[in-house]
Image (tube, rainbow over all chains, first blue to last red; front, side):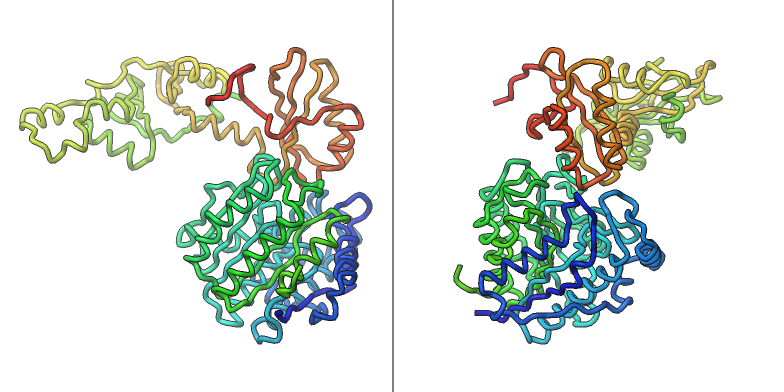
Length: 318
Length: 229
């Protein structure tokens, strides 16, 4: 058994996206309920949210953007640039709590208080750009965590695995010119899905060439395709890169019952994926792994998906 | 839609008396494949392509092989005017992008010099310029989601679709309408600046529209074409 941290806080429910939006507080409610009913909570170290220091948010985002987001959120405005980005008066504070909680989870992994952690946060982060909110995302949670790891903990090689069904354009753009961060994303093909980036020829820029890897999956594909990608491409590439820490952008929206995509990964498929990532972490990263929630909108499937995910982190029998 | 708005204005040109190495060098340095050939007053007299040059030059694989001085000399003596296409097909400033597309496609060429009424070179429009314009028209450089909808070929269908999208507060990056292989049907591809497109999909289905299976999408495919196997 491993020591696994769970970042969860009821304040993450305060970001209200209104009616008819898939990224609802209910997602976290059912995830927490799923973990509770699976009897997992006593096995986990609960990590409460805390506000992030602004210097970490500013390590990835434009100051003027942060200011604009705060002002817009407090003003009572409901939409931030695109109708996708529904906000309320609590959204800015919630986003800051998400970042802060994740940084604390990273810290606990680095101090050895826990081996790994699952960060059940809202809002998600991997679409957020340097100066633009996008695709339900406001701050690049994972990107900020990597910046924190590199400057506060002197980590030189970070691996990011993003299996959310959408391409993490924001994360990619932060690190695409760097050879110290390997960003690997598997997602629905950008010609058929948001955000239209993450094409196979996007491989990094300048010194970072070869340290960005995009593997688009066609609509209708599922477990078999993901198994092939891991075995023939992802695992060999990480065998070469040897990350000191692995950060996972965990999206459950490639599930066959998730209406947002045409990808058909099964519940068992998600467990298989996470088991392979755990093996990678054990092999190269001393087990150090932080999983950060991105998408996943099927309220009926999220409980089991989250429970299996956490069981895998715990190295508990399924 | 005038060619003058989409063409490349800063044209790299060459003189008819330049030698082939200079022409080759100029194309390589600027990463281009066509050099309009001009004389004084920028008057267009020909065009030379990288293929014209490559088919004249001995293969680089033969560099180390025996090759008589005379043979080497004959290549060195060649000038652009000896291998260029004289009086090339060109297009005028007030012709349109559509003209350029149809001409380039029909003549199977890669680029068209753009000239004014005195035959002076004003620009060049290449396949790449047209691609750039098409990428712009598709709107795909901004994040969004493409939908595919099958509609009856009758007046007012597109309006209903656009109304549904606008009703959700979503901006449109583009709407492409393509021929469909079934008689009397069209395929409509709206590109939405949104990730959350399910409400639009649901409303379309409620109104009786058939969403195209993403794997059957095409923007350009001839009807009843067999898959190459």
